[in-house]
Length: 418
Image (tube, rainbow, N blue to C red; front, side, top):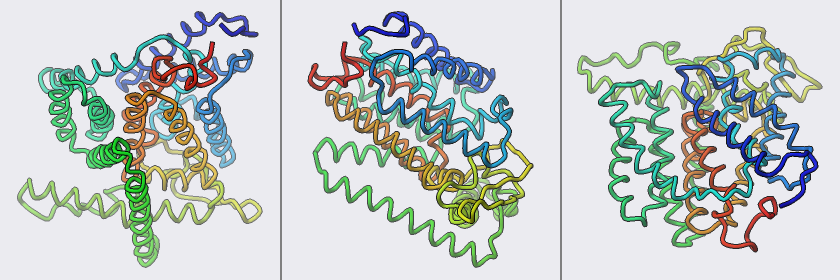
């Protein structure tokens, strides 16, 4: 094996990585707030990765660069560093640090001999049964919202489709479809359906169709954002981040079933005409760097300009809530500007590039998962939420760090070479 100047043997490094990886996985529940402690454990090993001479992946460096930028952005807008030690910050505004933490452990896990695809198939088979037993029979509160259940199930569902060639996956797909529908999470269903469509295009090697599908999605989203913003400006730019602030518009019927349908329609209108326009306006106010990471829900806004180019929200009213832009791309543009969203895209570009070196089954699985989370984030702020992104990142790390995910030594990334 390669010599390590840090003094850690490869086996010791992987043991450390596996221990922290397992601890992160076990701390995902919000019932017992262990996430900040486990995140700290992952962060303290980062300096040690620069002491060895082994190659590091673009994914690892992209994650570090993104994390550093987010911290600097928040501090520049007046957020105290002490906020990072608060559980509510990690759960809400700063949940991206926990969700993406498995990527920090890549240098400790690269080149292992674990066979992830078989374990993932077993997880796909067991997942719907566990959900049905634990949630429907034992009534355990595994997820705090329907979107949390939907986000996790979406990942399992698209992996199920990617592994459908295995005969046992047919029954699992039916059960996972039931759980996904049961979640009543529209964003998760959109993400799953779009990812399956792109998976089919990639499997058939219909590159032009795939490109048209993706570009059409982007164009449609931009058109909706533009229409919503124009209408919002015409209403004199009202700031209404929560449903309660636009009134109880759903109580228009005495029929409960119809009332529920109307309420879901109101949430769509709320996003198009009240939430998304606020994010667009924040972005237009400070397009390069945004208004400051974690500052979208800090109301009332108080903007201070720097050289007329950057406008941070420097209000002292610090809030850590689940109020967000309901679209990850708009949320990143609002808080971190073009530079912040570009760093996010660089990370996912690195993930796609790494997947291109894998065997076909692993490549299609990574691609399906990645497109699912990207599409689900069009109508929700899903690129940071732990219920969706932590399982995605954990499974991703298992796949890309294993030698068995690659065809032979010629396709093995340099960071996995002995």
